[in-house]
Amino acid sequence: MNPNQALWEKGDFTRIADTMRETGDAAVEGLGAIKGLKVLDLGCGDGTTALPAARRGAEVLGVDIARNLVAAGNARAKAQGLTNCVFREGDASNLHQLDDHSFDLVVSMFGAMFAPRPFDVAKEMVRVTRPGGRIVMANWIPGDPTLVAQTLQISSAYSPPPPEGFVSPMTWGIEANVIERFGAAGIPAEKISFARDTFTFRSSRSPSSFVADFRNYYGPTMNAFAAAEQSGKAADLQQELEALFERQNRSEVKDATVISATFLRVTVAV
Ligand SMILES: C[S@@+](CC[C@H](N)C(=O)[O-])C[C@H]1O[C@@H](n2cnc3c(N)ncnc32)[C@H](O)[C@@H]1O
Image (tube, rainbow, N blue to C red; front, side, top):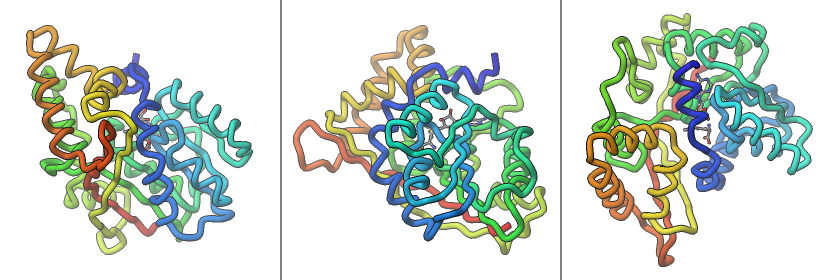
């Protein structure tokens, strides 16, 4: 099985996504007027961005490698009565089922960054966007001190070394890499802009319960715990993550969690 697909189907990302709805909606609001636009949400998960885009009148296709998340997205769209939002299985590195220039807007919130072969990902995103259209990506930043970058950094320290040739998803958070990848897809640097922004996770559960959600449902952290259990270091990993989540929590409500994380927003004019 495709290891990238296995990683994301392993857990149940909907459990984490439930803490992302509010900022997901705000991120879509930040895209400006999208009514009537054809929107592709790449690495869409269960629709944190796709559903709010459809509610604002866009015609949305969500594409994700994880079949459980595609099913969850379609179920959520149905439950919300959204007939203009469809989810389909697909790989951001190879969107062969999608025609050239078929979208006005391609969005990827922390999605396409996790696909293998980043140069192919950039090429595919550009290929399916119509000239005059836009690509917007949200990418975590390597070495950033906030939640997700730190969670991934801590998790990788407990995981076995990646296979040879593996390109870290976090490299999508480095501007020079982004420019190089879109440059190879024919986009000059002056058509690419960058901004730092904040994404807030909100859970009605305590920081340690939120860590448990990552341990039980978030593929990269599940893998780290599996490796740490084998090396007898699972308790250390648990402790490191709990300390991180506690430190970053700014909820004023007892036993609830509100944590903001910084990301790099990339906007490409095609
Ligand atoms: C961190 S989640 C973000 C999901 C969603 N965009 C959100 O903001 O809730 C990463 C998503 O990327 C998807 N993904 C990973 N590799 C992919 C690939 N090669 N092609 C398409 N989706 C992929 C995963 O299945 C997962 O849904």
